[in-house]
Image (cartoon, rainbow, N blue to C red; front, side, top):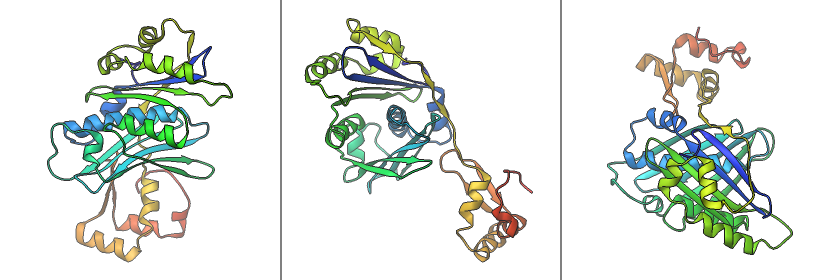
Length: 290
């Protein structure tokens, strides 16, 4: 397949064109193994994870990029996230039994797709992606064309075991790149889902662009990783009052918080609640339980 759990950039020496290739295997399997999603959701999340990996290649700062689809239909939320360290995670929310097969936009009819960029330092950016076409890749192509004025071709594929993505895009340049784009995009359009899943990056590039002078950069490693913690959960619980939390403990035995992404369970008893609202609770420490 496209190199497993790697993100790799490609530059073409004599054209204002760039490419990014992403292959996910263990990172993808770990993300969906945390949940019991139906096959359709697993495949859509695989495409979302491949897409957000490709888009993260544009990050030039420390932070994270999120791709989130929302609707009022059966599928409520599909979300994937990748940060500058190439940590990936994903989640889905849906109601009822889903069809075995359906296109991305069919499931999200009337909804929206949002790209959010969150720098660790700086202003948050959010862009709404039109739900045009039928597949996620077509929606993202339309976004780059309309919002960024950058002709873009995207291929996304997943099969519950592997996910892969390929992006080809015009680079902002002073020259006329129209002829180059027509040439390179017509070659890239011949890439099949089966090839993207089964062939390594070098083979794919040779198969598509063997007559072109291109450079394959050193790969970045992609991995599943959730940044939830007991400390962050504690910070979130402080939004509630001490009385509310103590009442939950009295009724339920503890305050139980599950991370939506990794299903990690954080439990808080009366002693934990007391510590949350003690003066020392404002001092950040370890995740150690008392």
